[in-house]
Length: 358
Image (cartoon, rainbow, N blue to C red; front, top):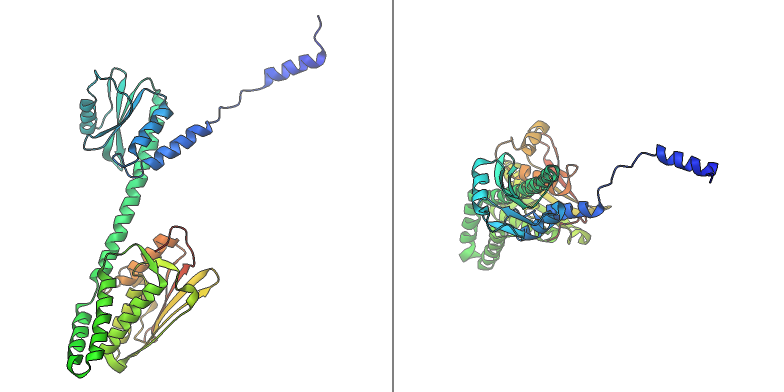
């Protein structure tokens, strides 16, 4: 029986086709992503068991164990009872090399050149698969470590800001309040309440974010106390548009800027000066300006201050770094200044930023 010519052409075409490379199954990639997310809190975190289940699915093996530095083991599936897995984990943690007994293998998990734990696998798994899965685990642990380090750094910066409360200011404020107890008791009581608010806001445990309204209340309290101390040498104007009051911003962003304006701008001037604080919406952004008519500085000195090399208060460098970490490198502080011509510091933040809420 003869084969039609067109069928023969089809057969030739089939012979010339090259096999397509196999695409990674979407389910595998999704599982790997979930494993990375489940390990965000480390090998002893609350989702470590879910990570072990995901790893077991990826390797298609009988059992998987994740061990942290303490030797604690999180299991999915089963490991052979006749194999001393605890001894294997101890060997890996001390030697930083893989260990195999029967069909069980233990791999070291090294993060930033330091031992972080071990991966145990029971069953037949290819070397390439083991290497790739171990890479996923290590990458997830590295990311978690970096995020934890960033969080600890942010907390340390907040502690540094709280520690910058000037003893000189506290002494002067309390001295003024004490001096008014007999002559102006109502005024003394009002200032004492302001002082309590100032201390509570500056030192109390607080979330990472607050609102523009709370920050403006804090700076108004601080300025009221400074006006009591400096008298007519300090003139103050504070204006904020209602539409930006609810905008979420990092905690203790505005107060260090205002304190810097008074301490380094107005106090050195024999005749004093004014501090003006404004907040308003500009398109999708909230723009806050802190301006003083004080001594000012050379632009190069302002640049050094923002870089943390200017000496004196580190508040501006701290605030600038925190803003950039939260909103990106295109945000941060803008300082406009000149010697003898005062200083203006601008803070620009989005009216809304995902993940930023009080």
